[in-house]
Image 1: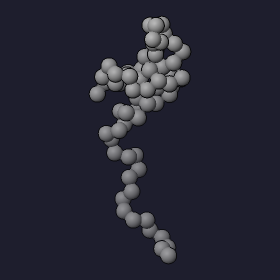
Image 2: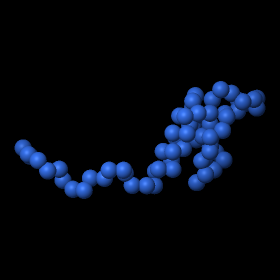
Image 3: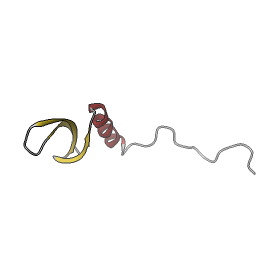
Image 4: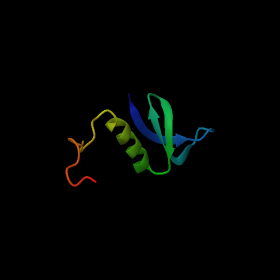
Length: 64
């Protein structure tokens, strides 16, 4: 999977103020801010990795 951030092009072909997230050449999302588009790409890239702090077992403590 190849994800990239580019300027979103309006239907008339001119660039807009929005940012596009393209995955394998297809439009996935349109955001107002570049950082938002980069966050979408980062979330897509992290999708296959395990969570940062997985639980190791049941919580210890008082159970009611």
